[in-house]
Image (cartoon, rainbow, N blue to C red; front, top):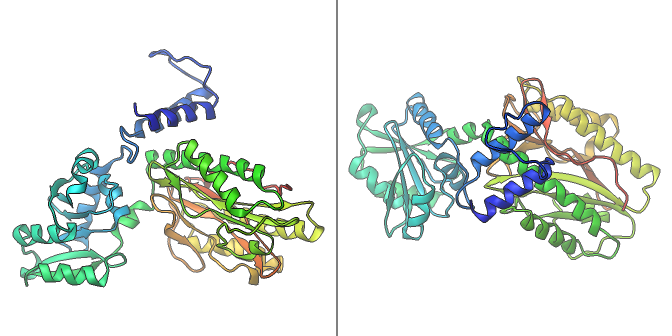
Length: 419
C-alpha cells in the first residue's frame, strides 16, 4: 500500500477509535461497531495504488453516458473539461480529450502522460501523440467517425467549457460531414448524484477539513496576520493527508468579515470582532467546504444576536432539505429566516452549491432554481449576513441528501466561539 494510502487508513482508524482493536480475518464483527468497520472498508476499497485517483465505477459511468447519446441525437460527445474526464475515466493530468460514442470511448493525451494514462485511465482506449489532444481526437474522428443522422456525424461539444478558439480549431480539423452541436451538461448531471464510494471519500474529506478549525482557533489571536493563520491550517491539511486545499483559504477579521470572499490577507486579526473562516481540503480528488465564524473577545449582545440570526437561517435551510424539494425552496427557507430577523438585504449570495470533484458543482442552491433534490446529492448550506464597514457572519455545513432528509457531514460545533 502506498504511503498516502497508509496515512489515510491510519487517520480513519484513529478517527473512529479502532486503533487498539485487532481484527483477524474472520472476526465476524457484529453490533454497533460493524457499521463503523464497514465504512472503513468502503473507503479502503476506494484507496488508490497511486496518490491521485480512486477506484470508481468508470465503466458504468461511461456506459450510462453512451446510452444518453441517442436520446440527445448525438453520434459522439467530445469531453474536454478535465473534471469531467476524471469523473468518466479516472485521468488526473492537465491535458486530455475524451471521445464517447455509442460503441466505445477513446482517450487522447500527449507524451508527458504516457505512464500516467496507462495507470489511471479505465474504460477507454488510449491514444498518445506529440500534438494537442483535441487535434488528435479530431483526426481520429475524421478517419473513423461515421455519418449518422441525415448523412451527418453529429458531434456534441461541452458548450460551457469549450473556448471559441478550441471550437474553431475543431471545426477546421473536421470535414464537411461533421456538424458540431452544443450538448446539454450530461456529465455534470450525472455528477450531481454521488455513489457510495464518492460519498465516503467526501465524508473523509469533510472530517479532515473540520479538524483544521481547531488549528484556526489555536492561532487566531489579536495581531496575528490572517495569512499566518491560513498557512498553519494549510500545513496541517497536508500533514493530515490532503491533496491540497479546495480553494484559497478565507480568514477575514473585523470589518473584513463583511467581505463574503475575503481571502486571507496580510491584515492583522483585530483586538475584537468577528473572524470568518471558510476553508476546505481535497482528498483523492474530492473537495470539502465549511465555514465557521468566531469572535475575538467577548461578543456584545448585538453581535451575539446577529450571529444567532444567521445560525437560525442555516438551520432553517437544513430543515428544508428532503428528496423531491427544489433547491430554490431551500434557498427560500434561509432567506425568509433572515428577512424575519431584518437582515434579508444583507444576505447577498446564494444559499449553497453542489460539491464533489469541483468545489462548485451543480446544483446551485439559489433563488428560483428548479433542480430537484435526490438522495446522494451533496450540497452546502451557507447563508450569511454582511454589513459593509462593520461585520459579517457566515455558517456553512456540507450535507448529503438521504431518503428521509439529509445527513449533515460537517461535525464541528456551530456555537459562537470566543477566542
